[in-house]
Length: 107
Ligand SMILES: N[C@@H](CCC(=O)N[C@@H](CS)C(=O)NCC(=O)O)C(=O)O
Ligand code: FES
Image (tube, rainbow, N blue to C red; front, side, top):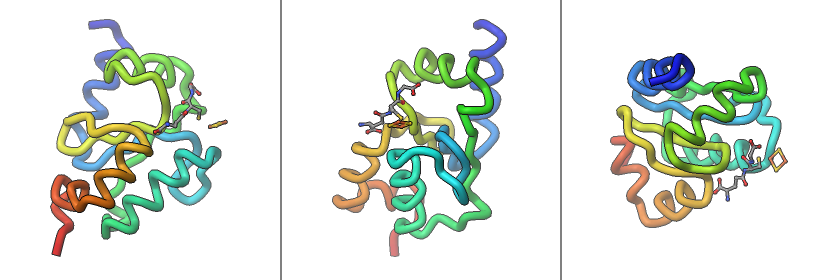
């Protein structure tokens, strides 16, 4: 594994809920990333429990995460070390209740 792939691996394994995004949860720099944060909030994820990586601050991670996940775009959600998807998939899973189940936030 390359250095950046190893760094990503450590990030992914180091936080239960990890969102690779553009900007931060407080200041998303793209509508897709903002939507991903909103969906997680709607699922009841405590903002303090939400770890984010701002790919705009690290071009190696911005490119490397696409390879790591085999997914071409940002945002990317990981839960318990597993790749879940981008914002479209998150929205579909939220609407079906599956995302809340994966996150363990369902009533
Ligand atoms: N349909 C995508 C929308 C995300 C998307 O298209 N992201 C683009 C624009 S922000 C992207 O990451 N492009 C590659 C890049 O900016 O590195 C989703 O479900 O998340
Ligand atoms: S930064 Fe332009 S669409 Fe995301």
